[in-house]
Length: 189
Image (spheres, rainbow, N blue to C red):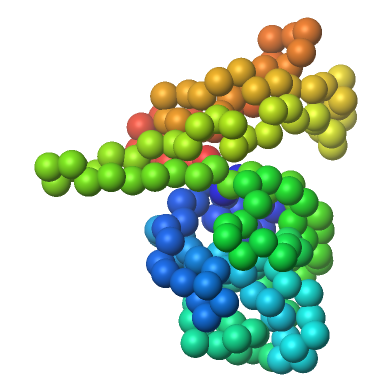
């Protein structure tokens, strides 16, 4: 997952692993290194006439409930995107995200991974780049970098880590994922 607001930045770069299925038959996922979950809820309140959506929450969903899977009686979550598709969350889109108590629209990207176990060694591979957006347009750059606003970045390939990277059209500017940009062991994303 990438694109979360700064206050929820701890989930940026998180990997989520499928844990099972809820009563609706939708899969749910847990972050590998935190107590955050992705799940589909047909109605996050107890009204039974709410909007179906994918939710990122710090509460584990109750897989025996038909709706309001976190059993809080309200729609309180980290982020959500409305969707009737119970198969999996969208790989990219505008999510409504709680950023320090203020709901903001944030473009989140989810990349599908698959893991296999071979002779006791875990191997993780990224899904085909076709699941990543084909292009990104930059906006909201600081005053010193305002010339970058409006640049369109085209999908250029994947790095050694399997994440997609993008190159700006007409200039040598790139967008890429670096899990350890401060050098070995600093782990700053």
